[in-house]
Length: 254
Image (cartoon, rainbow, N blue to C red; front, top):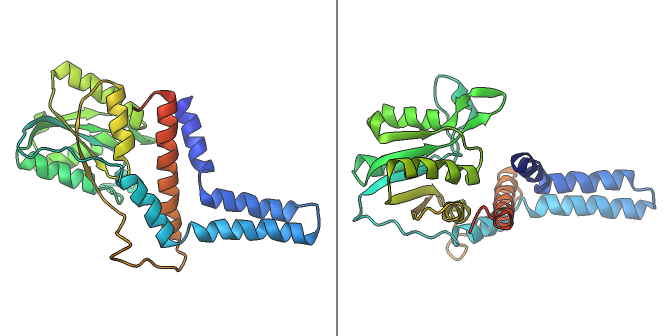
């Protein structure tokens, strides 16, 4: 039930959804033309506001500044925990496809290759219920093996559908294998919620946030032209903030 509700709320936590609702209210408003115009203008204002790069960058930066890095290069970890969320639906074809979070995979591979960890847990379940054979952890495990990581170093966790389940299912593998020194790798914007989830299930992890996306506005000026890409970035950040809050209320994160 929580999984279903979280995905439903994801759709509602979108500035595009808010704009559509405001436009619809404007069209259906029974009052004077002025009232209809105000609702329509409000919808346009929301759409434009969240499509500006400075706002999108600020929302992303607020998440990334909360990400802690406790990775210790002098430690050889028992396992890296690589969280999913980087495999694209195009991976259903013969050639794996990845989204903007692919740096999680690249950094994990580099650490394994350099011997900074003995093993890796790749955590991620079915990417799309319509394609039950497309399991993200399987795709990531095959990619690491293709790059030369020995299969016996790769533990596949194929059940989880969200960050809470990433932690729950990974904890079972860690407990079964007796691992204690763990390194959590995920995108910087996602790290605060992810780290909280692992703490909630009793796992002590070092953290290595990667895939930083926000820039320093004191050094770089953002574009004031609205773009769909900036709207998407704003939406992602809002959903992450909301997700973190809900997880804390549910007790899924600390």
